[in-house]
Image (cartoon, rainbow, N blue to C red; front, side, top):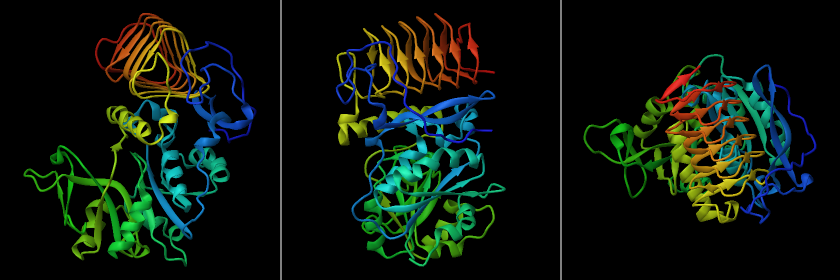
Length: 433
C-alpha cells in the first residue's frame, strides 16, 4: 500500500559542483533555500514506489490564482487504467504520475486548468485511485483547486466515465466543462477554447490537430470557415482531411443526457450523433501536441515540450558551456565537469551526473546517478536507477525504478523491469524480467 503524503523538511545535498548554470544562475549542486520549495521524494515500500513530500516543486511551478475566474467551472480528466504501453515505469506508479518534463504528467493539465479559472477537477479512474488522491491531496491547497475521484468498477470507455461523474460535473451554474485525456501534452490553449465555444453556440467543442499521415488515425472532417464538424472517418484510404481528435473537449451539461452509464466511446458514438445534428464544432489546436502514452511518443513529446518552453518560458531552460539545445535541469541536480548535455534532455530532482557524461534526447528521473563517461540517448532512465562508468544506453532503452546497469554495459533498446541489476550487454531490443 502506498503511504500517505507528509510534509517534511528539505535536504541540502553536497556533491559535484558544476559550471553548468541553472535558470537562476546558480551552479547545479549549490545549496538552495529549502523553505522556498515544495518537493516530492519517492519512498520505497515493499519494492514499490511511494510518495513523501520533500523538496521539488518550487514556488514558480505552482500556478497562482488568476485575478478573474470563471464561476464554478469544472473539468474531468480521463485517467484510464493500467498504462501497459508505458511499462516498466507504470509498474511503480499509475501512468498519470510518471514524470514528464520533471513533473508528473497530470500536473501539467491540472495547472493549465487552474490557470484559466477551473475550480474543480474530477479524475475518472479505475486503477489505484487511492494513490492518485494521496499524491494530489496537498496540491489542492497549493493550487487552490478541488480534486476528487470518480472510480469505475469496470472499464467504461471514454464516454461512460462522464455519465458516472454526472453529479460531480453538473451544478446550478450551467457552465460547460472540460474533458481531457491524461496522455495528451500540449500548450493547452483552454482560454481560447472557451471563447471559441461561446462564439459558435453549439453543444460541444473539440480540439483537433493537424498530422502528416492522417491514414493512421480517425480523421475529423469539418467546415473550415466555421469549424462545424461534418463527420468522422476512421483511417481513411483516400485523403479526406488531415485533422484528428486531440483529446481535449469543452461540453455543455446537456451532452451528459446523451450518455448512458455503460461502456461507451465518446469518439465513435457520442460525437457522431452530435455532429449529425450540426451541434459539434472543432477548433484547430495552435502549437504542439503529442499523445505521450508510449515511450517513442514520450521522447518526441519531450522535444516538442522543450521547444515550447524555449519560445514561451526560456528562463526555465538550463544554460552553460556544456549545454546543447533545449535542456531542463532541476535545481537540485548535480552536474560534473566535462559533460555534454542535450539536446532535448530533462534531468530530475536529486540526480547526480558525474564528469564526462553525454546525454541527448532522454529523460533522467528523480534520484538517478549517471557515472563517469556514460552515454545515454533516446532513452528513459527511471527513478533511483544507476548507469555505470563507460556504460551506454540507446535506441529507446527504458529502465524501470531502481535498475542498476554495471560499468561498460551496453543496452540497445533494453526494457528493464524495476529492481534489476544488468551485468551483461543487451545487444538487441528485449524485455529483461
